[in-house]
Amino acid sequence: MERVMPGRSGIGGRLLAGLTFAVALTVSLPAAMAQDATPAAKDAAPAAKSDVPPLKIELNRLEPAGEACRTYMLVDNSRGPALKSLKVDLFAFDTEGVAQKRLAVELGPVQEKKTVVRLFDFAGLACPKIGRLLLNDVLACEGGDATRETCLERIEPATKTSAAFDR
Image 1 (cartoon, rainbow, N blue to C red):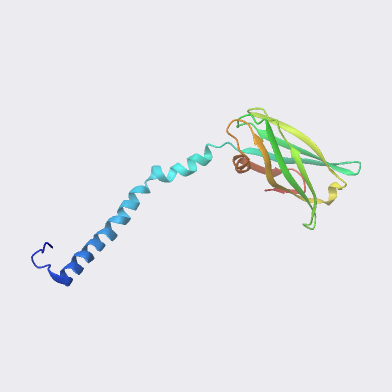
Image 2: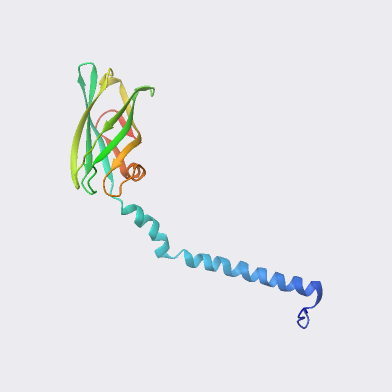
């Protein structure tokens, strides 16, 4: 019960009909995809990221404290929600790039729209030996809808010392 169109019977007719259908799909598919890439769709992803306020953490000062290096860390949450806890995993590298000490540090709590300074010591490590401080991970981040991952994405490291500070 096959319906035969005039001039399109047999294998050649079916092949021609299939080829016409394939060409029609090929031409209409890019046009449909282009409609999805409207300016509003292109701007949606960057807008979502810019909605997340940065959490600036600055290695502000290193000073000798006996056999340790006292570290001053400035946490600038001036544009973000309050954090009950912000625990980070830090690695201190020497001036030749070799890992020397690992330290878990609680930088919270940090009030909403507030900047705080937190101090901690790298025991047994002289300040001039520290060439780089690495924010290895966020161990805990609590407050509002914050998660470890979202806090890590928000963090913008900076330094005022001769040692680099990055993530």
